[in-house]
Image 1 (cartoon, rainbow, N blue to C red):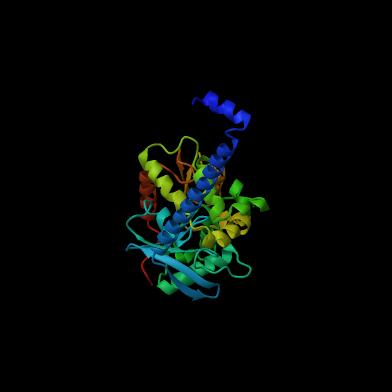
Image 2: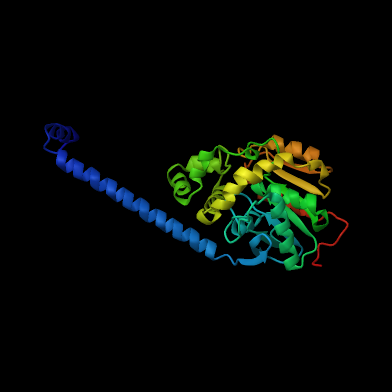
Length: 329
């Protein structure tokens, strides 16, 4: 039977019931496969999170969760949006591979509480409480994307605790990320919504995560990009923190006196970052006394393809004398 004859039979009604049944069966099967895949991916994300050794301490801000890896001089990481201590560890895996990394899940992320009236200032004080708990008198600090506000506040309020400050793909005054999104955007702050974008509208999902047009460029980029895109799941235990970042922490950076930052500062930013403005990062570098700007020609918000250069620039910067020991007190 040809397609033409099937069409003619369908027009006479002979094939309509069978075709309808086939369409219905296909739709049900498609939904079933989608549900199965969503549950599989959700289970994988939960297992990945559970594999990270996380601890928590009690502070005046409630529970503060953290994770560590490595040895040597300590580096405190203020992670980006939709991450947590797990994503923070992953984000700096290539940047600082040979040091002790300490990442606190910021307010509302994973096992860290969201205190009443939370602010980036409070988050900076929670960082200090963690450093005190760990016996770390002075550390280098890396702020990533939405982690910029808390990292800068730590440098402003406690410069004696910060050896070097590195801001990677930072959220600075003048950037679109420093403006609160419309209220409806929170509808996408869920596992199902983000998973649907990831699976069925992957190019759009990649753009939302800061991947520029034309990426990935090769197998390494594709692997790193895939790992980082997956690292935001599960979103449920990160949602409260992500909402806080988008509507409170990120916009607040516009009021910060960057000229008052006194610790050595390095800003690393890609010129094609589609999320956090490169021009805003450049302007911030001009405002912070003595700050150095490392301009990456490409790589976007995730700095794809730039790992070797970023690692070398950060290592050289962290090796510069600061006038004090970074060893535990």
